[in-house]
Length: 304
Image (cartoon, rainbow, N blue to C red):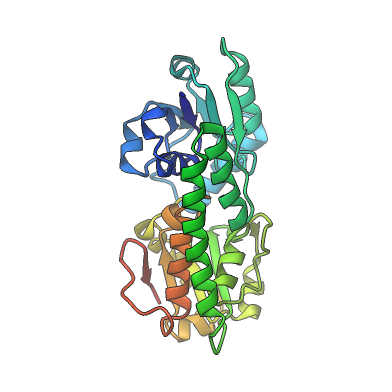
């Protein structure tokens, strides 16, 4: 089978099922496992984000969406050369990956008719179902079943241990700093499983822009910076955007030294197997008394 993956989470699933040798094309963001970076790049960003601020990225994205230009470009020649039998894509977010409608148009220009399999999870359980769906589509049902069981066991272990927690800290998960967005989809569920209370994000619903006054009124005991697509180093660079906001220093999280920057790219933004690593990371942050051990610097760092 010849597979093309147009989103990083799907690429991680493909490799987790032992199908890396059957992968013939990826997106520009598919960097895990590292072997994926050697695959032909079928999708590229329409603009370079590396030197832009959060606000500049937001403005560029919104402007391109308003004008109908799109954020991503598909290399039609490479896609044709890949001769895919299966294309893994998504219908969840037109900002996070190439829109499904564009993929359908591109596929319509191919000589053959590969199967399109969109992965659009909203919760952790949906992610596990997507792993099973990829397994069924590729003849790797047994491997997918084993992986799902192993991930489910880890999820259940975290939930069982946090059920014994004496307290559940109020938590604010920031998905974008300028403008401010609160994380949605699976993140509020992960906070709940990890033994926290997310009173701003809505489980299973998209991330939304939020007024800073609401955050101040909520008075979170823990703040976690997880800007979409940023690693720890890039997330730390967002901190000055927050420290100058009125009332920042009065937040319980700041006063108690419970503000963290995490590797959102690896553990929170992508709906793949490593979300379970993210769950375990959250549990360590929220309940170090239940989950002792050092948190790797590439995963998270305390910033206030």
